[in-house]
Image (cartoon, rainbow, N blue to C red):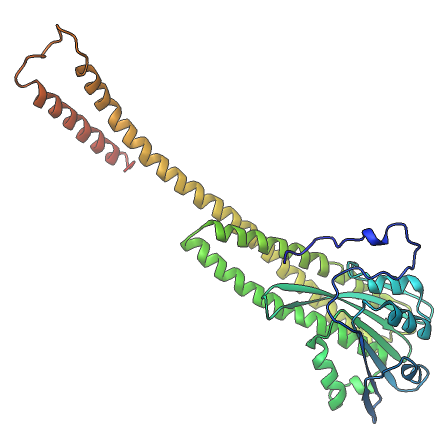
Length: 355
């Protein structure tokens, strides 16, 4: 299915700001919630059936990660917003999957939108998923369009108490989630690079219309990927420089490392864009060279046959007083002249390296 550069927003026209309307393609049937609550010594993982169960973690001393899979259910989003005091405009942005990556600061929480990039195992197409994060004092709420294993490594670190994640607060958890998304960019772009190399080999061996369509398809993919990743540097930079009490100084060191990774990713994307542009130029040049070669051969044949056609045309005139008309050697002489002219012209073309 062809991806749209802009999602349809016609159903939001005329509605009041903050109206919860899902914009995007629904990817799960029902929304589900998973809660991971932990500190240095304890850990619990539950799937609450009601939001009231989540409220018990709101004012606890542990760190709580509430993950919501499926953002099409406005009732669930509204209930979470009401329970944790999230602004209505933020809830509207969560349900609009065409948002630009950004960060917004509020009095008691930070709102972050990111784009998760992965390759569909079924279609082998690149897919972008919007991920929204709410960073509170002792909790993190993440909203995903559908369950994905990009955060799987983070969950395993929490379950196994590996690294410093169980010893740190909610801002470090947000750092870990962003780092998982950014690291996944590298693996996806690596697979994208493999596809480009295969296409480049095909283009050099046998440039055809199918290769041209694939180049165009990849260029379109790069536009979508660049659009999703380019603003990420601004988001990370803002997190580094924020004066909010929610982001501690010891966490900003790790954010600086993520920022360096985003710069590397953008360099890779720009390199891929240049390669794809050069591949398109190679394709057009190759097709042009093929056309020129064909035209050269046709032109040479045309030049050879022009004098022969002239000779045949002259001797094809049926005038009574034409010279050599009744000469016994006239016919073989004309053939001899035409053969000599042909050999001479072919020899001349070869000497000029035209053949």
